[in-house]
Length: 170
Image (cartoon, rainbow, N blue to C red; front, side, top):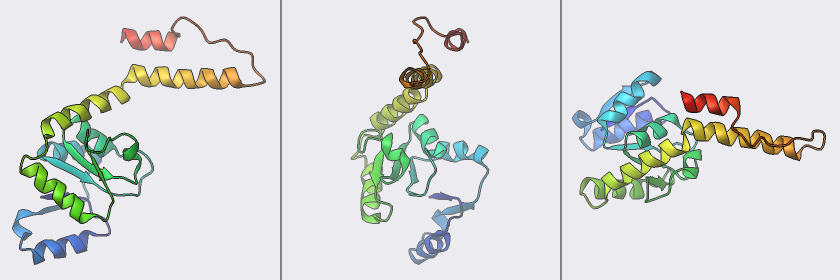
């Protein structure tokens, strides 16, 4: 087990690992640079981030999905708008250690098809964050705002914009 970071529960987790005589099987990295996170994800079979405190999509969870990892995230975080529970990852309540431990046992015992789940996670994250798709969505949102504005009379162009055409050629 590799525990990355040094959140407020670190001492409690360290104490629990020692009480379970797992000290030699658990690595506590402390804080690491953001550039190192993909390397730690690559080492993992399961990626867990159940923090409910977030200002948006957690890049580490998205990276784990892109790397086809089984992810377990918080059902009260923004990631719950991306992850379909049981389809391309799992969502649990942050304090529900029983569900989380049961999931991990099922995964490690091969009772859950993690390869297919990882493939679905990667496909979803690459589709959602496809550059062309994001630019098109953003432009459409701006066009809709302009169209609905009572001060501006605007018609959406029918041909691709120069920005969209430029992206396609790159």
